[in-house]
Length: 368
Ligand SMILES: Cc1ncc(COP(=O)(O)O)c(C=O)c1O
Image (spheres, rainbow, N blue to C red):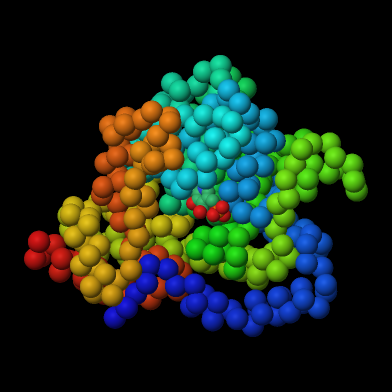
């Protein structure tokens, strides 16, 4: 049996007519940039995530870029974030002239430790960017309280967490701004690049909306130095077809995670920990495994695709050497990088495939 880590074609084939129909409508409308599709998907996604405003942009990375621009992050500033994540937050902070300040992660949830965030805040802190990694919410209350005491904006990186919740609130509606990615492998993905900024703050919303189109507030009136970062109509139309299904897909991800949890319970792997406050949507189903590299190789031989999110903390990446970090600065992150492995996870995976994968993992440890 062959099971890829993610299979985008199964999803496309299951809703081809809807998606193709929407794309055909965009082509015949002639409205390729902005227009009704963008407005509709902005309303749909912001509604789903409990935020007043949604601003469609060209990628998740651009969403972070625009959010930091809206918060006036600049030279001399610091941005607190996680070293155990995709590179975008750190990259964007540095491109703004600011310094990413990493704090360690909780070894069970892989999310930033709120007490360490509070300890890292100083007069230079211009933004805090918690990342809801793998689809599980960061513990937001202590984060918001610490930021609130100092008047520092919180930008949620919810790229992996569309539909996830913290207590009774959807993630993306808690911070001052939130950033989403619609990269194809995301749990709500388009067929190219796309992203969105969410906010409940009209002033910030207006600013991001202007910044994404060159800082323009009226035709040829530029209030800010902006960029060109718009979600295009074809991607918006694809997302509109898919957004109808996101809740059902997230439910299925949660059932698949339960199946994995049950079948792997007695094996020498640590199954994902779901905090009481979290409605985890399992963008990734990521284990900590003994002999992770051996397991990955064995699963590959059995036809099972896996991925390592992430093999090296950002603080140890070559590009980030000027920050002066070394192995051991963030021990939980360093440990996670050697142990994590993400199993196949997508809503269309079958129960039989989950059985097969768990059987293969059992076989590996039986012979290890
Ligand atoms: C946590 C996180 N932040 C930001 C991004 C950047 O999103 P994009 O690839 O759409 O630029 C990603 C996705 O790759 C991500 O996983």
